[in-house]
Image (cartoon, each protein chain N blue to C red):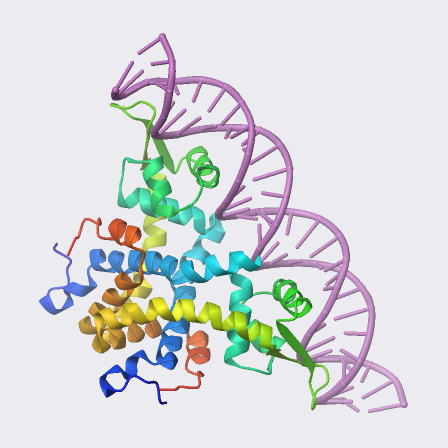
Length: 164
Length: 164
DNA sequence: TTGGAAAGTCAACAAGGCTGACATAAAATC
DNA sequence: GATTTTATGTCAGCCTTGTTGACTTTCCAA
């Protein structure tokens, strides 16, 4: 266990503890996506569709370019997904009023319904986990995750309505 | 903000807080995989190879079946990845001594070297995050993640050497 | 000795990433 | 007003990594 840290207060930074954190992320992310994945199967959609729906719901009227920077994929890849959501009537693409080159994306009622179904499944698991461990642990959870993000993603993250 | 919770102590369970948790997971996981992904590109490997290498390193002499249950993919999918790692000399597949049908997987020196490179990148980011937020937050982080896992994954998780 | 488990492999397919090239409309700039 | 830049869409083709199904070989254990 000699980790070279010296102080006992740094034992949480040992390689073993860090590895535990890494595996915790891996296994927890699996759980995190498991419920939505099951629901998406019924509609023959994938995780990519879920992500698009999620962020369009979070920021209605968002542009394609903004969505691209949040999702970090190419426009070709996003377009394939978006195309289907629009064709299936889950997403509406509105030509920009000030700048007509832009497309503003909003969920239709049908899209909002699927979003609600997916979101509720995910929130339900998160709620159970939060409830099981209490508010202080939740604070720590959020602090570590935010510290683990890339800087530009941290920017997108803190833009949620409920800014702390 | 009326959430029906009643007590102020349950404000951390509002839908807004849960959504923040969901997005935190999404963005943090991206950061979590970003560094290894960059390294893997140099070797033309993908995340699937990383996962295999990681868990073989964690449990040397593990069997293919055990690895399958940890990774949650089909044997055909794992076989493709494993095949390449073996052909490239990163993984050695040893015929079981007691049961000769089983293959026991171990990293070669070359495989261990790549594992170390990937692991160090990932630990480095985790270390920075842990250090930035302190031990109490780390405890909360681990508690929430563990509570979010599926039960069978929680089993695999607590099997790490450094069991708490 | 035979049933079934463990493992490997072939084939075919799909989702969802990627690059590159090209088209169009509209805004911005010169 | 002409040109350039920006935002978006789309075609084609490639890769990784997941899937299902079918089949074989090996070999433990009842």
